[in-house]
Image (cartoon, rainbow, N blue to C red; front, side, top):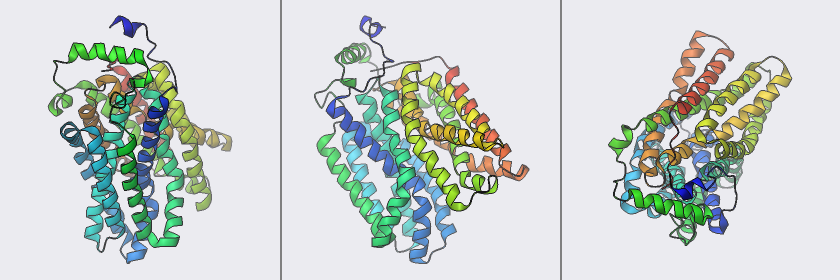
Length: 424
């Protein structure tokens, strides 16, 4: 470790990112808003409205979402290669424009086949610009402040959970669902133009320091001198790396637990707690709003303790929160709802932070792409696990506690490997 590195507190919580740094953060918040809003939460409104508008079968439309996500998951692995060939900023802009065009086609689909192809394109391109490209830009700009930055940017996911269905409903009331989706597609294209004008792929290109800190810039320069002869990690190399697999599996456990719990939360409040649909949906909204605070708070924990220790604490928090949620007393339920909201807020923070920690700026693209694929495969098993558990037992107690245990296992997996910190 260099002398400069010894003298710098890499775990310091600071918000001094400069105007250009905050611009990067602001755009990533919006990018993640579109990703979660269009490909996850917005489907609650889009699918039934598209079915009603065209007279299509809603179940058929809904069934297309799963294969679309799986196809996009594997396609997104390849974006690291595109980034290496075309450059990070150019890939970001191209995928955003393609996502916007796909959104317009999706909203104006004339048959189910066109709907399916457009949806695959949307999920692929939105995940590319928001995650593969957006997180890579953040890793370049904030190599040692990744925890706090990921905590801020992933607020966009929770904003989407709270707002997207209201936005879609309002726009659809004036312009039908086809017009609403076209407007959002145009908004993504406009966002691409603004990013082209205002954002650079690295702080050095913008005439800034990484983390807005000259000392960090000096450390990175020294480390890059030491490794400039080394080749960047390949896909094969990443898939042979234990950190890629363990971090991908651990974060996948968090995702599996989150999808399993959140997908059944409305049903839980209605069946187990006696709420009407409106009240149950209100609970979901409350959890999403709490998640905005949770996202920021887990970013601070990540920054102060380190990502791996934060992941273990996150798994334990999840377990305790679910235990409170399903406990019979009503006060316990509210405590559990608060803790669950905090957990879903932090869920999106850790994978890009782990990739940045273990592989640094140089190898982030390929390592994150592979980790995200593993994470996605594990997360997609959620509904299978849920179906098995529901077939074996009635109610929500056993499935929810199993998901809580899986979250703890994820934290243990991540913290079990030796901490590895790379900046360059």
